[in-house]
Length: 79
Image (cartoon, rainbow, N blue to C red; front, side, top):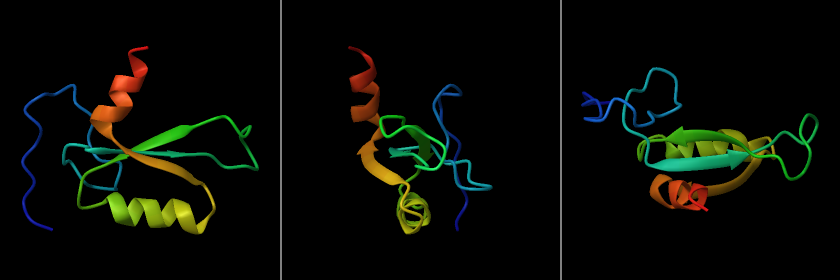
């Protein structure tokens, strides 16, 4: 991994990958069917570099439900 330049906006989400401080660009919606109801969605956020790795981690466990761009996810929160 190269040097990561922190986001200019301190309130913007950062990648959920351990040790990564890059700005998040993706939302990974998931749930653990042993713990959560089918409609419940937990979220991790990912930078471009870690999107595939985090998606694979959740997918191998059968937890991954959706991967959407962060901007699209935030628009969905508006209404």
